Length: 87
Image (cartoon, rainbow, N blue to C red; front, top):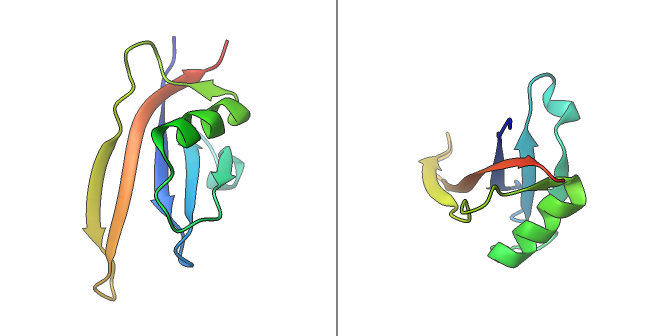
């Protein structure tokens, strides 16, 4: 079964969004906005993935966290996991 990468990232306004990276245009990627500055829980991320029609494969419940530095020196925090189409 094909797997995709789901990513959790902070928006410029400090809120979080989750999206599934698919082939094709970024504008077509399934996305869920959390509307909060607090890091969404693992359960909230799973619910968002479910609403988008995706799920973590059995045993793949780990989110890998990474940080980067933006051009202005601010730290960007991101997380990612593998997902597949639900069902």
